[in-house]
Image (tube, rainbow, N blue to C red; front, top):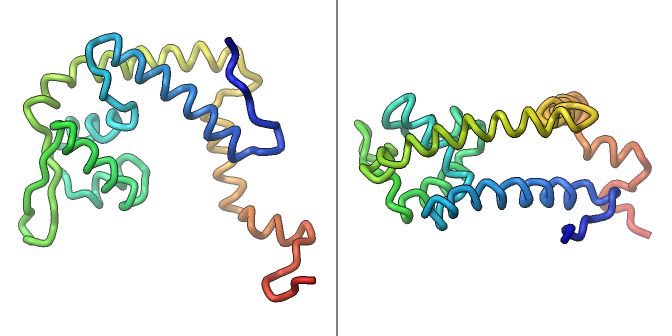
Length: 164
């Protein structure tokens, strides 16, 4: 059965739907391997911590390209799943993220899934008009040059205080 797809004009909804579909399939890969609670968003921080060793949340966020807030939320989920623990850093206010033994035991599977998913995404890209990551980077570059809010205002939406 094909998922109900949002209208083409609802780009934000469509982007979230694409991410849901992709994440659901990656989560199913882990569930089929006995890890029903593993979330695809766990892999980038686990891989970064595996490569770099323990990191403060701020550094982890920078390495995986998310906000400090998003990284904090993911780290909290990882901690609840028993995959990381937070310890005080040299500065007692700083919290440093460390992989647990459970995370180290899962890393071989995470590495294999990551490599297989990269191959699967290249195969998917071959079916698309352009590589998905290239299109998403192009969108980010375009809105960095000229933010969507500017484009919306230039399209004629009155500024605040000019309601009719």
